[in-house]
Length: 270
Image 1 (tube, rainbow, N blue to C red):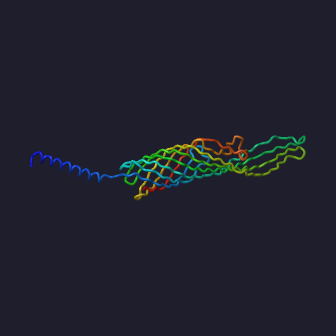
Image 2 (cartoon, rainbow, N blue to C red):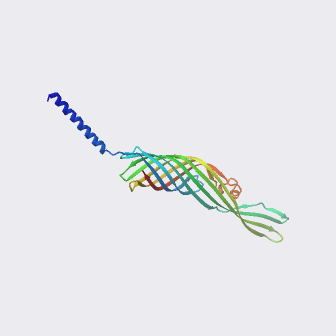
């Protein structure tokens, strides 16, 4: 065999071997395909500023798309819906209003003294509709942490039921017959006022996820959200006309609401 022909044969064999090893390495390299996840969780929403109630209980259901997966990290975008409900009953300290002293006859005066005891039940229901982005970082093969941003709307329905208890005392001073007091008690329910608002919301979320089966994970997360122009039921003592008038003219105000929500639930990936 001629020298140049032998050299060419050796070079061709080397190229073929290199291609074979490269192909074998490619087959052994892990392939991380995009995945879809369905999640269901229970949550506790807490008031930081201007919710109508102090806390709400509920849950969410969502679907997310996981992409750019690697051994160390992943990204996801998702859409969630939920329902949270809460109510609170408050009895406010009684307060007294003294009426003017009126002269009925010379030497005989009368004064009406009203003691009011406001009671109020405020309820709130929030339906969150949220789009989110999350960055996931693998800590171990089974545990990962994530951070993300949230945006969407809160559909909020609030209601207030107010009852005013009243103790009325008529105080009389009579120079002829002496002094006397005549007490009366009463209480009235004044129906219910309700309002509904749709409020834009933005927030951030942190969480930890534990993969306990091939397709199943358990997660715990927390978020802080700001909602804009949400209706707030004004408590009776803050009524601009006074607490005794809250039953007749319940007030609502538009507020920027800040809340925090803790969730725990399960996700299924496929």
